[in-house]
Image 1 (cartoon, one colour):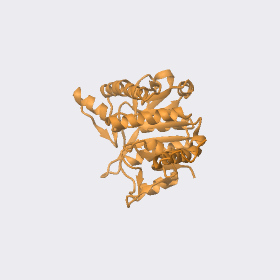
Image 2 (cartoon, one colour):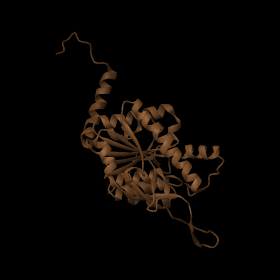
Image 3 (cartoon, rainbow, N blue to C red):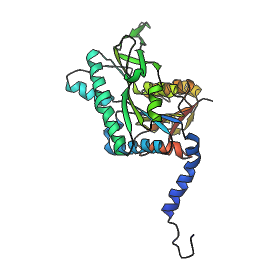
Image 4 (cartoon, one colour):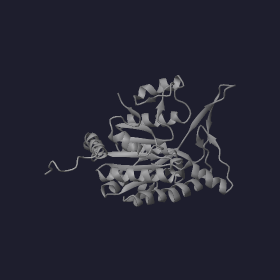
Length: 303
């Protein structure tokens, strides 16, 4: 019991308490739910941000949310290919992947990056298990097909990207078993095709498919931009799937943001409650997005 002689609470202490109270309804709403978090290759280059990311993931697990991490590693793959003398080629942002490139991608993604992420989470006090789509038959891939239209002849032709795939089927049993046992799944976007060939999958695409299969409460795509910006540079905080085509037509969105938003729409339409594009360079951006009224990124959800 306090009395008149007790010191008054500090403004900083009151602010921290108010922050916790603000988070309470969100903590209640998401308890027991699943968040799928895509963590990109560029963000991994900053040790301080990596430490913040690991803390956020461990905190989510500690408060009763089941985080599932899907990671990329494009810059790291590129660096390794350069080291072994293999030139990288890209079509529409996707790496053309021959057999040698696929082997390097698997070595980097399933090996060094995956285990580094697991160790970061362990360093923050969590327990993580590194996986790829190959483990436990978790993901079956199919070859990704892309077409392009010649601007002169207007003839459409099929692009062969090599061993680049997309998820065809996801068995959520492995993920759910690991999560229920108190561990955090950390998934590399590598998966076999039905014929046994190994395919490299875009990490955004893999994360979206996993989020849909798990009926996740949130798909969080950490990027190197604030989110989706309008033509005045202001953050668009709330979008519906139907808004994306209009934003593309008027060139509000372009380049790499287009496939990210397409992934968000596919995930939301296939069972994920909502998807968020947010800036992974902002310390604790996930927590600001999920547990504050203001949020921190662009939310995409069904109408």
